Length: 278
Image 1 (cartoon, rainbow, N blue to C red):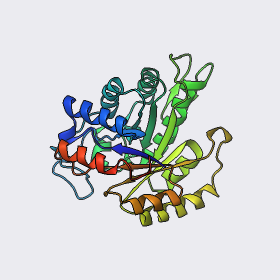
Image 2: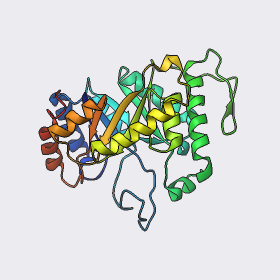
Image 3: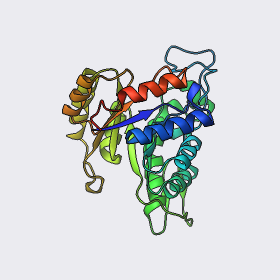
Image 4: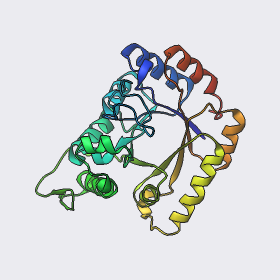
């Protein structure tokens, strides 16, 4: 089981010095991946479902990952996640292809449909359309990346008579979320599914639902086996890690909350570096 780390594009760890120190340290320690999440805007004042205060600083994940790419050589870099319906799919496709080239294929595109209505509304996305936009944007981007003569005619995206190069070498799509729509999207369009929770018991429930969906949804052969990624919102013990591995987790991603002190984050990474057996 591989180990990754997420969330370090926010709060006390977002500065250039902390980013360089922590990213190079994570790579030296053998972490397999480095993930960055996003909220373009958040409700102000804070609402119960909001994961952060409106004044908590968080960097754009693609900009952050480009910076991390420049100071690392091996660690995989992923968005965990980009809120896809908020993004222009053609612009994002170009950004992803650019990161794929500049990282030598280390970039992974983690996506989700989003859930904060005020954020989606501020960016012009009706809450009722977030799922359909997510599916269609993925299909449109894949068309732009792979078709000899890219053309797409959908409800939300239409283009023809265009092209965009360089093409990515083969971006892996990681679909995050626990809703029925997210699970179906992971099976039908993703190389991996990304879940979030506190314990192995949380994951067990998600995997049972994912298995039911996998029995109902056709999976394209070219996607191969659906990998399982899990982001733990709590520190992980060696015993927990063994249980995650037994449940079939390919990549366990740790989150050094509360991100208020870069030194504490460094200690967290040091303590967790051997939890997954890497």
